[in-house]
Length: 135
Image (cartoon, rainbow, N blue to C red):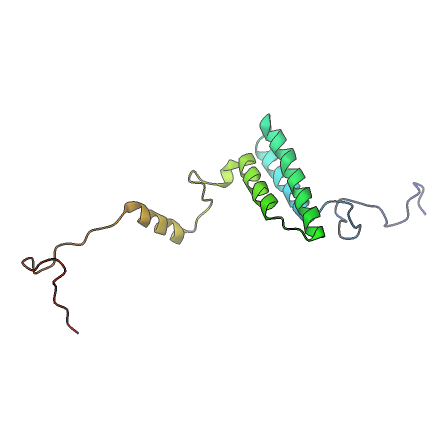
């Protein structure tokens, strides 16, 4: 025994959630707290963003508890995602689509240009849709 009255290696710590049942933090809460800590390093949270921070942590706790009980957590996960984007809007671009691959960006740019009309057919005297095709 140690002098503090606890048994060796039986201390409950935040990173021992797998061994302690419902004590400690779940994986979603751990990752949410880590993400918030990274956001706080970049910019201080003031005003409403402090409340959003607490709501994110509460949602993460709710998600972890729902997972352990086998409940559906899709709504809470969506809300957590939206609130985290409010805390750190730099994660998404102006269009709100996030980081796109170059191929996807070219695809969206192609759709933004609109249709490209083809030139007149070589036989301008023929009525529209009356073109001969070879089989």
